[in-house]
Length: 150
Image (cartoon, rainbow, N blue to C red):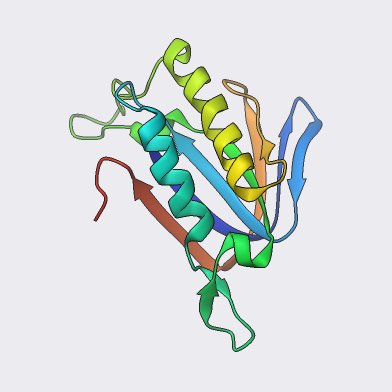
């Protein structure tokens, strides 16, 4: 499982001119799922996300977490996070999970994140052509891969 976390002042997801989700301060989470991912990956990753100290404290130092700030989150499925650009100029997405594997893991990720945050999480629409708008705060953008926990 791979995520791109973007600390945002605001973010939204729109599909077919209909706004599905919108948040103010919090995280926009772009989520890529591969076939080998499991609930263990979800548990580790959601724990990391809610506790990562990437929000400013009163002194302006990144020392508080999503839980501390009571911020919001939007999760957007993004199979392109598993693009391989090793050969040629057309990315290969062979490592990205097919919908029959990815959709249940995507839903489990959202449910687990909601449980840890104690609130509803915004989402996009799996497989849809989404328009994602954000105001990156910082900017702070962090990549996390459960297969590389360095």
